[in-house]
Image (cartoon, rainbow, N blue to C red; front, top):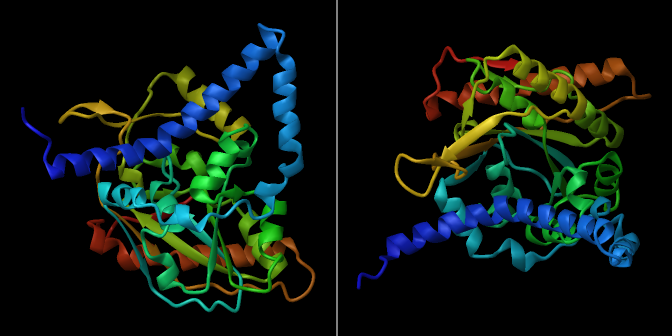
Length: 332
């Protein structure tokens, strides 16, 4: 009987680590929703659902107040396998002082923001060594904290917090300095432009993070993920009705519905696994912002323009990752 080689075991661990992140969220959310619907609609055990919701009440605000932090989880050896699957790498261009607070803004979002998770929610990348005395807070959609069990799983495995305004206000003010909140601007709406030619960021009307930075007078730090958008292929729908539905759904939910696929467990097959392409994140130079008086739309627009100009780090590093010199960064 042939035993699996060490290489096969390592590959299996890498695949498991990817599925642990992606499928576990889907499975937990679906299971909890279906169980509670079944209890309420088809049985007389609806008090169980009421009890579950009641238990959520005491710590409902936790995701907006820093969440739960478990340092030991950040150091799980499983995250190393996750990182090796692609592989992933982060490079910093400038040092950051722990005497201030910061908002680190990541681009692209991609489908699952694979690189952002491992860089900022784990210690695999050695981020705490590159930026000592900085406390990271990875922010994600508040909807993940609406479902029992899922909310605790998200806070346990990734130390995630809600990306709501009240959450950012708390994180940037509850301590004097040394906090860095990480947001991924653009969301799934950027998937719409993934195959349209030039590299496109959904950023033109995304000014919320700039307003928050101005209100708290904290610096912005741009970060760009080279390779994040290459992890999946996208099926382009040609029927007019499908395109109209996609645009309508995006206008309503701010999410662009799309058909993405990667590869399967065997060679030349397709499935839900992302392609194992290298991803490198470049953390750029911090951009200090100041409102110098009362906050106005003019100040927000000016700071937003300065931030977009700071994304020149794409042009500075694109040649290293096989991107043509003629490839432009388009802001929509």
